[in-house]
Length: 442
Image 1 (cartoon, rainbow, N blue to C red):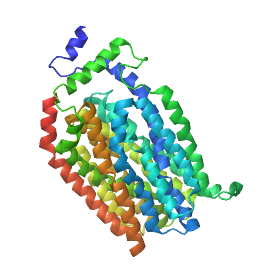
Image 2 (cartoon, rainbow, N blue to C red):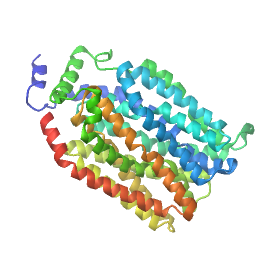
Image 3 (cartoon, rainbow, N blue to C red):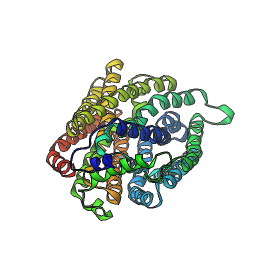
Image 4 (cartoon, rainbow, N blue to C red):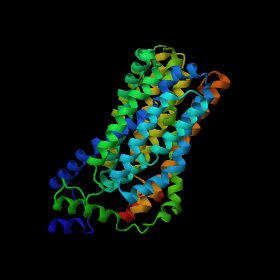
């Protein structure tokens, strides 16, 4: 009891061997599983970038049509993300994340039957609707297990799934495109959607049995361990007054963060849907080689994320970490466009850009819980993610349009670089609001 009283006093939470052990236990229980789920979600979302290498020729689609289809996924995200996150708050993470994974796996497999632009658009929209709520749902879910002082590393551990998916998935996708064409009478991109969709269906079923909806329902924690975690979370959120859905929409800082995240996603979406094409434009023709080269920026992004999130938690600083990462992303995109004639330098700048863009996101996502808790946090996180992911439509569509008009992606990369600089300026300008909220909630 004295331990609990110490936790809920006005003094800062003291790090103890017991507390560290408890949070390690929680992290190793739930983060690796969610990490696996995110890898599969990412692969099913972006493998269309590799399918594009042959799919456009087979279906006689334009670059603009591809960019529109790739981006329309995020229009569905925008429409369904907030309702999805509110439903997860109502029915529980176990049921809802299992539903999300199962349905997106089925729809991803159905992409192999695309035969026209219209069906490409329809299935990409349905895929976005099926997946809507997964990422903000996980962010909200993790905020119910870890206090904010530990959250950057936890978010970083989860968000590492993106570069890991790129590191593993790009060579696999490239190999499928290289070696499966014509096998059993199927095209290589049809095999790609089939092979990479099946694991999501299987893991979706597994999710039903594995996840726990809350700390209170976790049978693998002792009562004492539950009390420690719950008390830590209550101390942290006890001074936050807004707990309603409305507060998740009405808080002005939610919309400010939404704008910043939209600008950041302009950069990450460029990589998600155009990295294979950017590498091909540098001068590499083989799908297998493109897949291997595309793994390199993701390997380096893993290192960057580990360093940046650890540094952010160690110094308990968020703004400058996010801003400097955005600036690195901008420098990398600009450098890649300028050095497009030089394969080594161009790929090097792409690596720098992805390192910065990937490392910024997990630190950014520690900020919403500074202002919101409970169902307001679920709504606010979903708003930020859904508005921000409109860039997932804008970015690939912009690149496709400019490439069709000019034959080059350089102008689009300059515009997206400017978005990253603006994001850095806005996040630094938010300093007083963030600092005031953090002081209030300590």
